[in-house]
Length: 463
Image 1: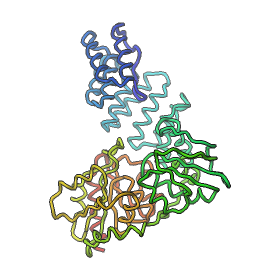
Image 2 (image 1 turned 180 degrees about the horizontal axis):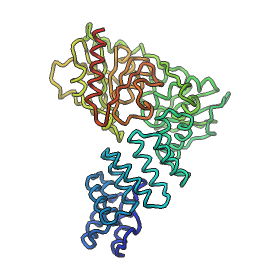
Image 3 (image 1 turned 45 degrees about the horizontal axis):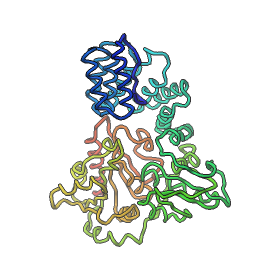
Image 4 (image 1 turned 120 degrees about the horizontal axis):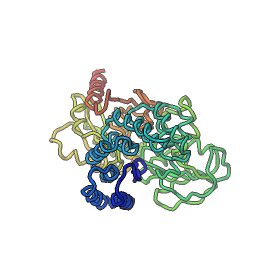
């Protein structure tokens, strides 16, 4: 019913009525009518209890409804009645991956593979669980096996890209990462001209399209001076909130706000394809600061900054965009930050924007924190504020890229499964020379992350 779930047509000797119910439920699932599909399957199970196809299909519907515990019971009940069904085993593995029971999930996917002929879906699901467990070398093998069976399996190639990039294998990783442009991960855009391959384009126009989030645009902006040096006119599509910041690079001939019609061009490309052109291997990575601080905006923050007196000025951000599906895995509450970093000798400054900014209103009065959000209208304002801070401490979001691009010391607090850009087991990053990464020892070990950063801050203040 979904790309990662499997609904066997008839793993058991189900009655024709039950088989018809599975088919009807699949059609309702495809139409997004999950409540109707679940009700239909429930009624069918009343007539045919223990039918593993019905139980499996109901689990898929529950997963689509994000009722993952209910899905878990369905899959386990289905396996009890039909222990040799590969589709049920892989679906159970997917649900266990959601619950971070990754060792069990991996074992389930291996059982699915053992009970079936070579199937790209099962190897892809195994690769996903291995990657979530941080076992990226093994994940590459699983994704590669899926691609050997089905060469055009885009989600498997995208998964392999993430594992290669986590491992620092940029040459292989960037090549696979290009599949995002045809996989549906990136919304399709009608772009004119030829796809740019990094060659000179003297006397021609190159248009670079924006993709993904604010952080990705800031990260890729380091390459714009090098792109401009290769040719004629450089047009760049950009999120409106970033335009005043990117303008300061002084290399883009025209910035087109995201959402407005795109002009014609002789060549086109995407911003997140630039690393594949200019950074084919880890050793060639440019880590030097590349964004200038907007000094004309510094004055508006000066009264707030003067409140610190002789105290150490520390900016904090506790959440990225709430529309990012996995933000809950990387964001923490404001309380975590106050408990760890509101210490003598420190003046905290909130750089947080968006709905999570509301957490400040529930805090007791008199805490050593100044809310800068009312002064921040775009990322150029955020950059002006950061330029006057001594340090930024935050969870993973766009501001981390901004602080790194400015060359400002920034500490990024990471969860167990971090974005591939931060690689594995490193406390530094080849992308930003001023950035330090704080990692947990295990899943959900956030207390250790905050404790480690807090003691480093204490030492920094003492020194």
